[in-house]
Amino acid sequence: CGNKPADIEFVLDSSGSILFKDFRKQLQFTENLVDLFDIGSNKTRVGMVSFSTDVIPEFRLGENDNKEDIKKKIAGVKYQGGRTNTGDALHYVRTRTFPVGGGRRPNVPHITIVLTDGMSQNSSYTEQEAAAVHGQGITVFVIGIGNQVDEKELAAIASTPTDNFMFKIDNFDALQSIKDRLAVRTCKVPPATPAPPTPPTVNEDAVLYGNAHCGPKIPVDLKIVFDTSAIGLDNSKFIMRFIADVSDRLDLQQSQSEVGTVTNDCATKSLADVSFGSGHDREKLEQSLVGTSPSFSWMMRKLRLSFDQQEQRKKVAVVFLGETLDGAEFRKVLRETGRAKFMGIQILVVGVGTRVNSRQASFLATQANQVFFALSYDIIDELEGPLLLQICTLN
Image (tube, rainbow, N blue to C red; front, side, top):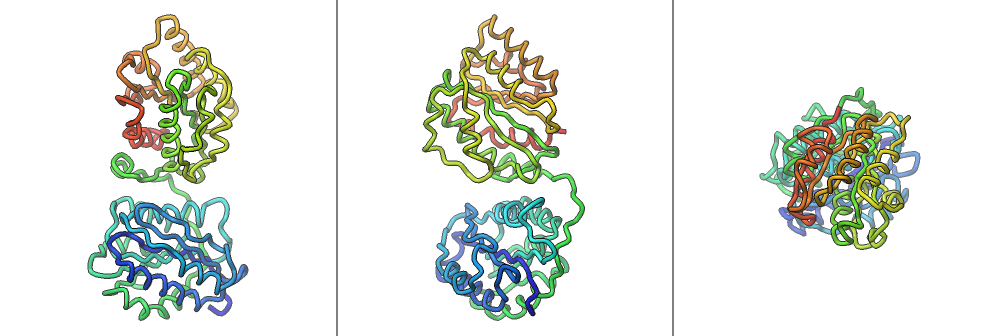
């Protein structure tokens, strides 16, 4: 590229439909392509993710400026097998590799090169994420390999004109035949110029029934409320796992949103076996598990006071309720809930188990459609999609 700088992220399909020997051919192709670039901190920087069921960051953009070391890392990438979650890979590219508001090298092309052999698990979500990637000024080359690829989906992933940014080849052996053409075209990509920001779109079916991410329309300060002393350690861990999953699917950084907890310190100090993703700050969440709560009404008061009155973000609380409150306590909770709603706090209620009074739960929620029920804590993940959809569509 004549020392012209660029940032290039390789996105490699590692799903079960690809044979191991063909996956190795992808890696060899990527190594050969890297050989053609001028690698350096002020020249071309490269990174890589592989994807199947999960997205695996293999090495970060600019993590290494030595071409031979980069090629060794590429050669050492492990084959995954699994589903073809292309949408999640594109989501990673736009929110982690080239995030809006930080981490992007200015005045250089931002390029993604996607290799895949098949149709993704959720085409509409993939197309939604591809549109968001393009909107951030990221140029996408896509290489479809074999006869199982969906040309419509490839065209949606590729930048325009598709004749320039989409390649379709018969097999993995043909990868080497397009190497030089691809390298030349990447050198011609102009510096990134993101489109004006637009409100995030939400693919409702992908959120409800799949694992799609979504971003709140407006910045949100989200608090999850649960009483560990009442539900015990095991059930608390189910909720913490739920928080981790919801946080990872919310575009927190993109929407300038935050997730925290309001609870007591009973039992929740032993959370080492809860697996946290990268969508939120584990340490910050655990630090919020402090204080004592002699009653549910006290905890609702604590919720109200935990919000900064001057904070401009939308205040949202998800309150877990596991039993029927006695008359006196329910009246106190209603009073605290009324104060919270007066402050503009949107309250969503999750009733868990058979001891929950559905009428009480409905009184606590801000709106009738913001009450959810699960038979037990071990299946609250079934409510993840409906809750996310509510949060992402708040105005």
